Amino acid sequence: MKKIISFTLSLLMLLTLIAPFAATAELQEPASCGGSYWNIDWSYDAETKTLYFSDNGGAQPNFRITKPKYYDDWYNTWRPSYPWFNQQYGYIYNNTVSVVFDSSVKEILPCQCYYFQALTSVTIPETVTSVGQSAFCGATNLLDVTLPENLEYIGSESLQNTAFANANTEEEDGVTYLGSYLLYANYTLEEVTVREGTTLIADEAFDRNVKKITIPKTVTHIAYEALSQITGLESITVDSQNNVYSDIGGVLFSKDGTVLYHYPYARQCEIYYIPDTVKTVMTDFNVGNSLTNVVYPKSVTSIEKPLYYQKKGWFMGTKENYEKALKTKSYNNNVKCCKLKQSATLFEYDNKTHKPRVKLYAPNGEKLKKGQDYTIKFPKASKKINNYVIRVKLKGKYRGSFIVNYSISPKGTSVKAVMPKDYTAFVKWKKQNKNTSGYQVMVNNSSNNLNYAKKVTVKGKNKTTCTVKNLKVNTVYYARVRTYKTVNGKKVFSDWSKPKKFKTKVQL
Image 1 (cartoon, rainbow, N blue to C red):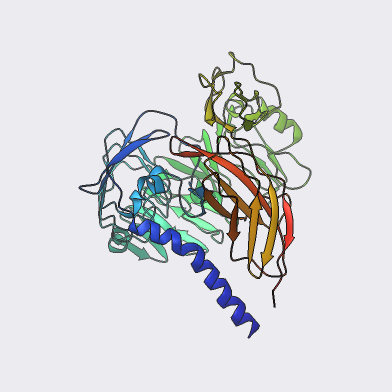
Image 2 (cartoon, rainbow, N blue to C red):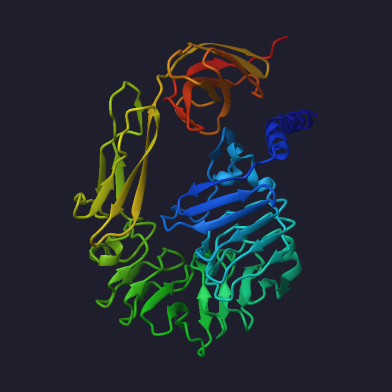
């Protein structure tokens, strides 16, 4: 009986949390608008309910699958932070009927049209070579799609739960195909023989239980993450007539043997000697069933995966090979391997210019030199309350770029009192008159961890109280508050106040 009551209360709390957002998303009708997001220029035509995308040539966001934790004030790990999902634009995603990518687009980003419920058609030009993971996932009414012939990458969930996938995918021996693309294999399979005619194997196509994979001569592209998660994989066999890939002892190579693509984690081998034809190593190595050492030949000049050397755990060979590999050009010149440190992310407004100190380090810990190894571009002015961006671009033997975010924030405030009652808490804070558009209150059950929190946004600088609902009884909580000022439609937050401890109790 207690379990039933507890489940019912949890369900009611969940519905209470979701309902306001769902209602807002459904009722709001977006107007024609547009803007830019990283390398994307976008515009929405409210009359035709069409969303247009083009590529502006800028830097792409540094992610594989975009499912950030926040947009607006809602905690949704399953929704991307693209502008067309934002309340500011009336939740365009919920109204768009058609999406058009122009010929400047080469890559459809992960989750770019995630859960577009009204979407029925997508126009994709032949210039597109990559359809990111979950790009159209959940667009249940999407039926009219023509995929480019020269596609080189597709995520296994790119078109999942769409009318197009339901009408065009087929299953053969437990493997699901979309035309010449292998999307995913059933998780129960231990051996997979890819059917003849397949040209592309999708990202995350295989489950960790697969032990053996046979690849036909027709396959020309294999997404790296199609193989990297298979911890049980023992061997890969490639048809000898394949013009792109080959195998040596169950290990995946390029046809000419100069690139080592993937070493199966569960392959039975204590010491692996990389062939002396190999110039580029794309795989990482794991101490699996038997592997303890990897020996690199002098021919290797490029290592594309981060290296680890430990006496137990993950290995990339002996310590000597590890140190040698750190000196290879390709390992050092990748932004993913360089480290950036900034002195601060938040400065309180005092009518003075502020900017953080930024330092960059190579993978071996060596400090990079400004001007020689990278350039840095600060905002023209950073005195007023606002969110700011510093752009760092690597140069010389290094490549890639960093985006450094910081804010000049309004003055903060503090919690004056918390009065708990049953499943709620009445929070009161000190009024902040200057540079304040409102407040945000956070309640969670940790004194130092700011995750998994309930947040309530209060508009207006004169309001100094709010009620936080759906708490658990007989539980210790911590309340914090911060101010915010709205600048150009976006909130700039102060730092959180010191936590105020309280405990909920059932009032009889």
